[in-house]
Image 1: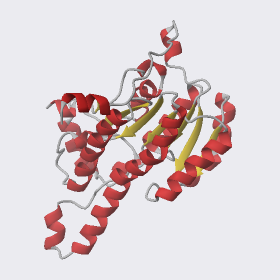
Image 2: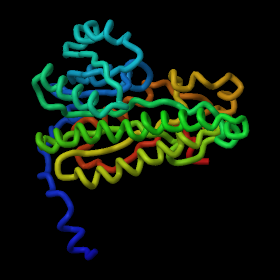
Image 3: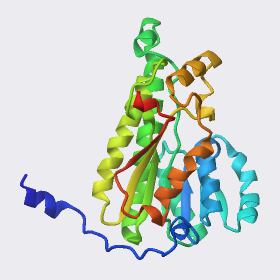
Image 4: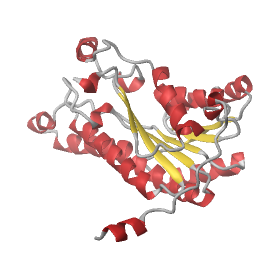
Amino acid sequence: MSAHTIATNLPIPQPAPQLPDHVMDMFSLKGKLAAVTGASSGIGYDVAVAYAQAGANVAMWYNSNPHITEVVDELSRKYGVTVRAYKCSVTSSKDVRDTIELIQRDFNQHIDIMVANAGVAWSDGALLNMLEEDQEDKCDEQWNKVMDVDLNGIYRVAKAIGPIFKKQRTGGSFIVTASMSGHVVNVPQMQAAYNAAKAGVLHLCKSLAVEWAGFARVNTVSPGYISTEITNFAEADLKEKWHKLTPMGREALPRELIGAYLYLGSGASTYTTGTDIIIDGGYCCI
């Protein structure tokens, strides 16, 4: 393929944005609508709350943990925005598509930010160990679950929100929670499925960043070890090993990540696409 052919296949460029004079105004989300999957706890919950604090209306997605249905009214009153909860499984293309359409009807405005954050961990150890224990069916089941949520779930959200961003042509932002495990094989736990899924997420999003450059931005955030429910499988001695391998010597609080999500969702990042922000306490440096 010639360079000319490649160039003509690239999206039509967007015009340069009109940026506010004050830097803090660039980070404001006032009047915007953000949707966040996996928002019932952990990173997703804190990102959703941060967006509400920054002035956005927020659609918080959950699947098996409905507790956010009890707090959205309080969040709405506290921050002077509209926050609603939506039950949706990212393992179903229909559920994802129907949920996005419902959000559009409920809020009656453009979706400006879509955060794909839902994910599950792999806690079953090395693949060959499971095979040696004659658990091939369980191995396949767990592998498929991790891939279906952590990688295919991103694909389902992307194919549902992409056409909407393209139709809106208002510079939508698609933000995906990846992982440092997509960059390195972190130890001592063995988690080939999770590592492979997150590596796939990184490359999928870089590919979409090029495909969508004419109408939306696509970026990822790669957390390291974060103190959330997804790491509950780890015993204290395993977490101690994590801390020793992390230059900052600890896990992060979920709220220590929200600055990256705010940046990527706001007008401060209008020239940022195809980027991954690693927030891992220095783990990937060594």
